[in-house]
Image (cartoon, rainbow, N blue to C red; front, side, top):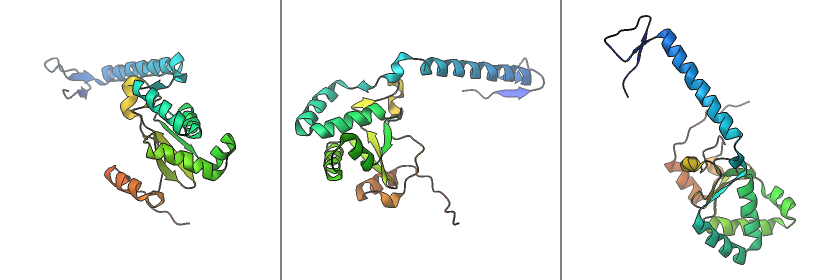
Length: 181
């Protein structure tokens, strides 16, 4: 991409030069197009859809046979995930929704984690569940590459399992300044 030069006067010998007024007009056009695109996406009937890989049906069938509760939890998470495949919910909330004990929820979630249906990140006492985007995703097909845990959620490395701590070390982690009150 060529550099763009903005100045008071247009240099007719340099095609990469525009005036301030022309650049302002370009910026306004870009904003207008972006707003129109966002409006189309917001009003799209596909906003209530989730996309599923064909192989996911086999994995769903396997999960239904192994643990109907784990399947129900996975479907609940899929139906409530954001466009980055993440949903934050505590196990206490899951016990209320599914009307089972906390240990039953724990075992079902463990099946999902070990089966690679989800990844679990900790945020205080709540879990951040990121669904496997090779199975299901909740965005435009072209946005699938952004579907796994690209959210503004602040988590502590110390709260994570050893396996997750190793994985987080490979991510670009923004260090936050500690503020004492």
